[in-house]
Length: 428
Image (cartoon, rainbow, N blue to C red; front, side):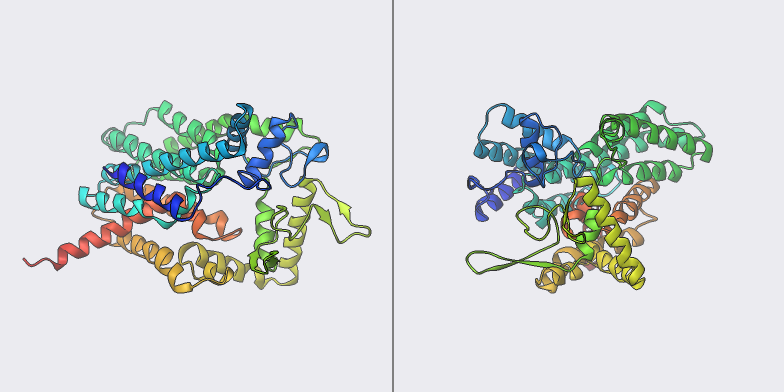
């Protein structure tokens, strides 16, 4: 029932926003991922989405799985419109499964069925979920797979709890499976590559496992995560010339620079103005793969451009040491409260706070108030993810869309507080 409710809401959202319409001829389906897919289709490999033709340099801008998925659709001789619809159908189905998985996370985490059901229903109307289904991107699929991973980890930790608390050990193949899935998931999107291992180890620690055994499981996690994602590392570190010494993706400093640089304004032919962050994607029209500090300007490869972004960001920090403090504070605000993000894009701060800040605050308060009533393993896993997952975004881009992979945990926390409040209101 929950799946069908979510399915109806998501399909309705696509029609209300007219995202079912076929792409215009000049539009690249899948944005940067779609541009890389076109390079793959034409035998040019993972070439930069910011350039075209034989001149395009190698790219580490995105992890490989989603561009490969789009390239496989084009390889099947599908048109741009057909690729769009296949991707949207996948998004809708994956996103409709998300509330069901959140329900299972709640039940597996020791929450009551009512709390889990309230969170599941709320996830059917999650603003970020409704936004993600209309994007030809990895977000909807990645969020659902990450949620499934959290549910599976809770299930395995709960099943092993009696043995571990009695002084036993968790079967090492289970930790191996966590690491392998973590590495594969990172090839789709690396956002959870740190949060999943920390959540797993925190869960083991909450069951009072000996620290030496926890250290051994940490080594297994690190090794298997690396092995599962090693094809991409071999390509970046050993095959590319010069090598791109990045982990999974190489646009970290690009994101930092995009958020430190003054916001650009794009004036469209109809006279409307759209605020765009500095970024070399052609539709932004705010920057190109060119070093304008040289005379004449120097054309850059993608890796040279990322290095230049890093130099500019570090120079900004040196010139104004307080910049890093104000920048991190703004990203923290944008990630959790939404007020800074609303100001960044000239939107209504109240609306952003209600949609983004209120659920987060309710979740944190609920986890704190109910920390002794919930199973320790659930508190450990939830808190580890809520603490570790956002850390990179405090430096790059704190925004609601980046918070979507942990919305399930946030909604479970908010539902816990709401249900507990309703119980207290009932007369004795």
